[in-house]
Image (cartoon, rainbow, N blue to C red; front, side):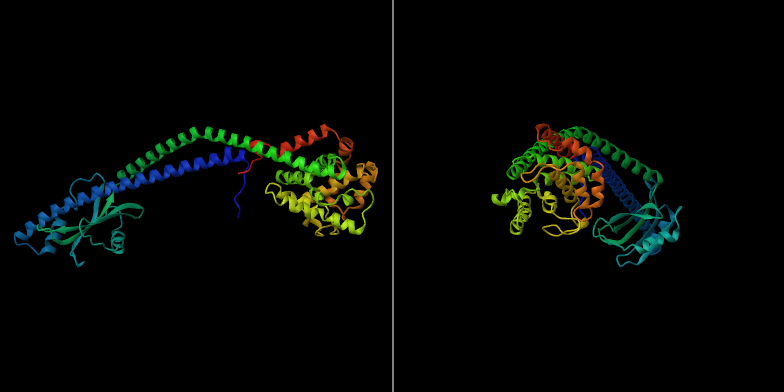
Length: 442
């Protein structure tokens, strides 16, 4: 699926603004998340230190019991666990709800559970489901969730006085509601500050972006204006070679655009129609003068040569990326609705809409204009001929729409060949091609 195209104005004032807002929220959320993660990480490190202090306190108690002839190591550990709290009194961040010791082989030595508001079976299940990791030196810890509440799960080696690991202490630390709220509050504050900074930066840069976009629009307008001048010059040159005047190009462009408006063609289709209207006969540059300027009806062989101007025209416009869409009219303006036209015998709606519209405008102007081989027809005669081609040469629906505006167009433009006519066409073309941020696409 191709990306959606926006007018540059829509992109600058809506899409870009929304993207900046989305980027602000994303960056703020990212930094807020990092702050929250770092907050929990910092708390986890302190919890590990608290646990180490608790283990040292327990080690002293175990040694005392062993020295006084008490139970074995496992029994001494269990007595110490049962005799006092799992951790020392420092409970700024929460408290331990589970502690146990096991030897390096994984055999349990002692265990104590104080689940507080959590389910004891849930705590044990979580511990059982967590693969034990036997640290080499400093131990490890991780944050886990049990029942929607954050805990720290940690494992710390227990060494004797010679530094030899004789056991491992495993603990589950329940983070207090106050600590959770504090971490979240800090994360939200950070996200808010970052969001404000990014938003302020975006607001400062937005006028600069808007100015650059407007300059881009002006430069693009100048480029499009140059292209339009070239389009007009090329179309006029071909028209004058054909009939000593380029007025036909201007009149037929106005007729076609008015019909396109009545038919509801969008801006892109109208721009295609304008290019095609100016260049519809550009291929006649490849037709020899004795055929192009013959004052009488062409014989079959001559007409076959004349028909090749369509393919000549397509070869010309396809060489330009900017003119390539003119091929709808250049290649289709001699097709007929019933499929009897040329060069492809296309029929019905397989003929591009711009070509079907142009065919009506082209024939209308040809019939109402003076040519070397004929006098202009009246409006009524012209409309009768057009109606006789309904469903054969012309699209019936488009012909009906044209009938509602044809009289006005005839009275206003028929036979005109003056500079005001050209100025009016240039004004219309400028509106559809050179509209600044409205016509440029992103």
